[in-house]
Image 1 (cartoon, rainbow, N blue to C red):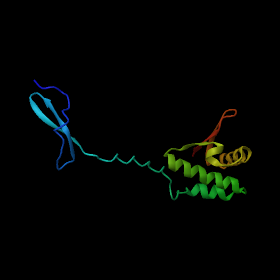
Image 2 (cartoon, rainbow, N blue to C red):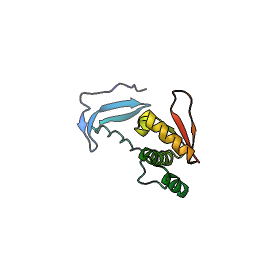
Image 3 (cartoon, helix red, strand yellow):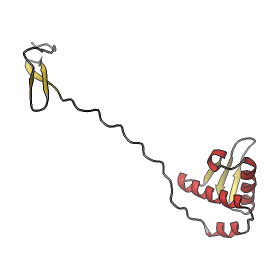
Image 4 (cartoon, rainbow, N blue to C red):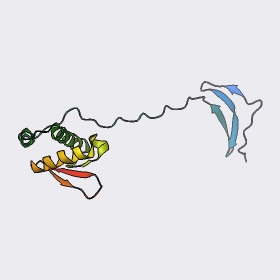
Amino acid sequence: MGNDHVRAGDNWGHTEEGLTLGFVMRHGRRIEIIDRNEPDPEPKKRRKPFEPLFVKVPRHWVSGLGQSKSASTYQLALLILWEAFKQGTKEVVLSTAATGMPRETKGRAARELAELGLIRLKGKGTKALRATIL
């Protein structure tokens, strides 16, 4: 019976694959140990998050936004459509981080969009508003 000890010493040599470190005996067979000196594999690259290049604006949104006098309302409307398309949902969380607008401006613009019949708002207390596209 063989053993699993590496036998170095006079068993060193070079093969086509690389440096032979010796051999091991397993089940009565001599198995050569080879060091291939392969470099570490490159780490996987992170995929970039999905960023749409354009968003379709529904016709009733165009006519509804034509009645608005606020640039913030128009900006928030486009941002809601962009986020909804990006996430693949009809509901968007209007957090300050997502919109980049001050809370008062965002709230005023969101209420105006709701009055125009473009979105439905949900929100309780200090939690971020949620806008559902109609």
